[in-house]
Image (cartoon, rainbow, N blue to C red; front, side):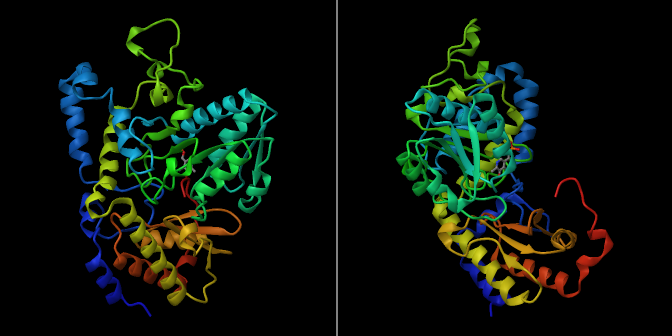
Length: 420
Ligand SMILES: *Cc1c(COP(=O)(O)O)cnc(C)c1O
C-alpha cells in the first residue's frame, strides 16, 4: 500500500518541485485540468500590465517595432520548436488550433492533388477531438475529398494508394491514449500519403520529435500544457520540404512577403511566416510567452524528458491509488497502462454518475473534468510542472470519500452546466 508519507518522500526527491512556484494556484485547489486550461503563471499579471501601460499606453503604434510585437509570433514559435523536435524558423504562434488545422490540411490536400494518381481520401480517427474532424469534413467537401473516420487499430490497414492524408491527434483527448507518431507517419509515407499531427495534448506534456518522426505538418494548442491563458494563440509547424510549395488558403497580409509594401497582389513570405493570416492578438500572445517560459524553465532540471518522467510517475501513482482505494465503486480505466501509449492524463470510466462525481470533486477543490460518451469519462490531467505526488494522494482520497459517502448523489451535483 502506498501511503501519504511515501508520496511526500517522492516530492522531497523531485528535481522539478521548485517549478510549482512559477504558478498562482489557489491554496485549496488540486488542479487536475491543466490539459484543458493551464493555470496562471505568476509572471503574467505584471507582464501584461507592462504590455498595456508601457507598450500600448506609451509606445503606442511604435511598439510594433520597439517592443518586438511584430516578431512575437516567430519568437514564440522558436521557443515552442524546442519542445516538439522542430527547428528555429519552422513554427509560428498564431490563430487557433482549429484555424491552423484548416490551413495545414488544405496545404496537404493541395500537395496530394498535385501528385500522381487518385488520392482523394483523408483518414482520421473516429474519436479524434470533434473540431479536427469537423474542419476535415468541411474541407473535404469543399475540395472534393472524402473523410474516412476509423478506429485506431483499423488505421494501419486502411492506408493505401487512395489515401491523401493521415490526420491524427497524437494524444487522444478523451482517453489519453498516445499514438506512435513515428510508426504511423512511416506507414502513411509508405502508402504515399502525408501525415498531419495535432499536438494539442502533447506540446509541453510529452516528448515530441517532429523531425525524428519525419512528420509533414503539425498544429497545437497554447492554452493547455503551454499555460498561455484562455483562448491563447495556437501554433503551426510545416516541414521545410513543404513550406514554400503552396499558399495556405487564408492568405492574409501577415503572411505576405512584405506586408507593409501594400502591394495589390499576394506574394507569400518564404518559410512558416506565410502561415500567418492577419494582425495578431498581442496581449494574448504576451501571456502565452509567459506560459511557454514556465515549460522552458524545466530545462536546467532536465527539460521535457524530466517532465515526461515525472508525468508518468504521477499517472502511475494515480492509477495505483484509485485501484487500491476506490475498488468496488464501478470505476474503469480508459487510459493505456503501457507508458509508450499514455499521454499525461488518466481517464476513468463509469456507467452512471460520472458527471455528478466530477461536480462533487470540484466542490471539494479537486478540479478535473467530465467528457460525455459511452461510457462517460472522468478526466484528470497531470501537469508535472506544478503537481505534487502528495496532491495525487489527496485527490484519490477525495474521490474515495465522494464514492463511499455517495456525496455525488446530491441534487446540486446533477445540474449540467454549459462548459463541462
Ligand atoms: C483542445 C483541442 C483543440 C482546440 O481547438 P481550438 O481551435 O483552440 O478551439 C483542437 N484539437 C484538439 C485535438 C484539442 O485537444
